Image (tube, rainbow over all chains, first blue to last red):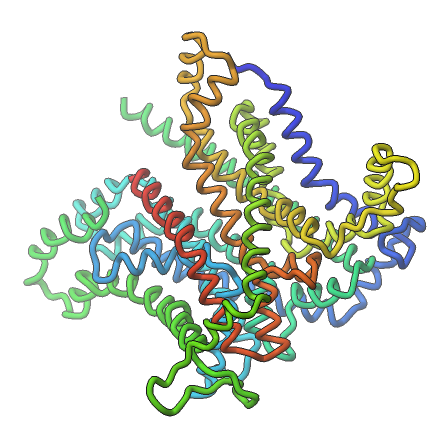
Length: 279
Length: 324
């Protein structure tokens, strides 16, 4: 018997109102005619037009996307390796340290990561001359470093929940370890790699603190640009920009969720069919 | 279980095929190389970009600050390092107050997240089929939208002439005696604003681990307790709550640890006269260019958080082993 609790339902209602009212309010005020971002002055879409004409914002958005794609790709490659190492190799030198290193960036306060990476880049520039100045390269390295941990955790949990007998069966049938890797393991964890990439991409696109420390003049990402503007106060063009970002993300998350739900359903069906055929 | 793959089954086919006409390189690749590459590549990356920076920041915290480029110096005589930065940490009230404000704000926010997040997670876990997925998606959605923009959304809400502030003012004024009504509620640039926005931003971090935990609970236990005569509140206290402890601890740490070091929220909505420690670090570093002091504050913050971080990591490892 599962009873409905009015208390739980009212908490859910309050919680979701808390989550969504500020966002909805922000969206509504992006259509505000008035320059004063918090006082309603009539309906208008002029802020959206101004946004698309703002070369500074377009440039920052492009830079953010470039960094996000690049760092998410590196993070997925390295994170997949790290996740595999943790899930499949129970013994190697320095495993405990490795496992700690993989999970530490997840929980480390961003200020500390940011300051320490900045100091590293300052020293590297001084003693090795590379990266020559802070900007695109240093931000990409920084984002890769903390995003790879997220990917590694996703891959590790996928591999741990995956049946190792599939890999053993391939091995018994004569496949070499690297063949097993490419023919069995990677195809199975491909969906986890895609979600890892998406997560790495979003957190790179969203990062303020670590970027703030590791970037240099001339490399202003979108969050850094917004951060600078927001410090000065609420403006309708940021509302418009925020609305567009929220829209893109909602559609993206909704679509990704739907696709994953469908592939999961399909996998379940295939499994059932396979079992039925065996009987 | 792990590690079985290359060790147990690999030797058999290899021994069979070794005499064959395969190149030495292929054999080497088959046996060891791919395994080494998989371990070494991320290992080196993390050593270079996580461990080395960590040692640099520790070294920096023991340096002297000078007005030069770069703005620090190690003394040229034994013992080369100085502990004066750490001494200043305790003598200068600014830093101690920064830590206290941070820990207090983070602790209050964690408590509020738990109070609101627990019933929400329980409600989602008890929801049926499609409802559960929809509710979960609704929790995750704000979590994926930009963090900065969520803070920004609240700046718009809290301003003294925003609709929300005016509405809240009129509600509050009903309860106040005549003559002492507010014109508007001064919410911005206060620790109240920081706590509110931290709760708002970090609530999904509380709900998701709690949900993952509550979802797995066996509801028949609750039914058994009820059959044995427990009231719903007793069932909650004696069955659900103790079983959900791991979720509570995980969620609380996931909120408390990053909230303590938070920089964006106190910089945008916080009180500049009573800053959280993240903002103090940033100001020391960027405004005062006092790199050694900023590093010292950061190292001390890490020491403060090392216990909760270790607990969290231990829990993660245990739950990873649990799925094996």
